[in-house]
Image 1: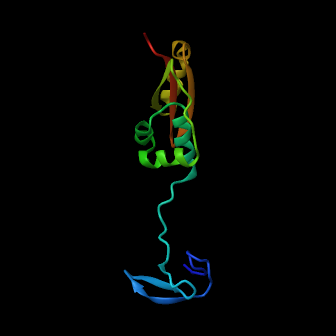
Image 2: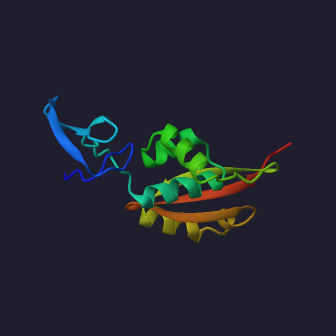
Image 3: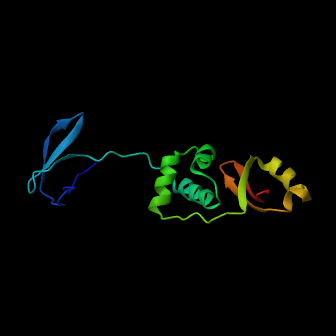
Length: 139
């Protein structure tokens, strides 16, 4: 990775200044700031970020989304804060979800009693499908 500017003052006058933990160290001539090459972290695909935020908007908790997508609930929480997503209030309804493969989903949708009495969303989840269904709280 080519370093062109100081990360602190953005000056282009930098020089090599040794090796630390097998990584090249640099020094800025203007501000005398020492730095190394930035680590390349794990980047989660935008598909999963969008999917996690959609599930959050549908009323699922961070832990439920973590179990479905396999992404840390802390990451999901950070995305919700970063994108300022507000969960709509679902006072009278609560979501339930099930994961189906293609044939199971077709069988579920064939039954009329499964389709009435609640709102539903079907979303693709890798090679499977997730069905989110809202049912009224029973008093």
